[in-house]
Length: 74
Image (cartoon, rainbow, N blue to C red; front, side, top):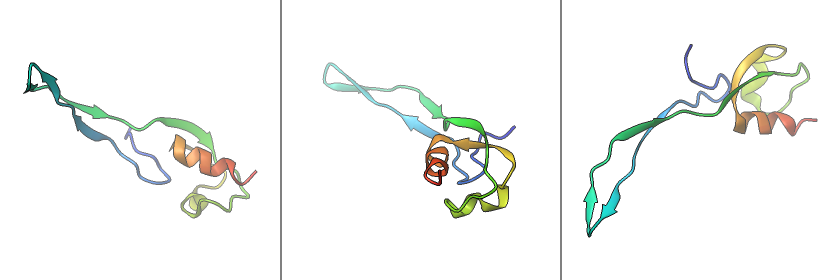
């Protein structure tokens, strides 16, 4: 299963955090950060966001930003 939001197509990103130790940067490993995806049923009478219209009445994986946008319609 792909770890992408079906509404906004948000995917994972690579984060490389540098830590300073005794005046020099310590090389650290790269980490992959994934979006916070939740299962949600998209209501039939949806107006906003416009990208969610094709998924009306379906159960999809959506990021929390898109779920907040869906809650504005209520």
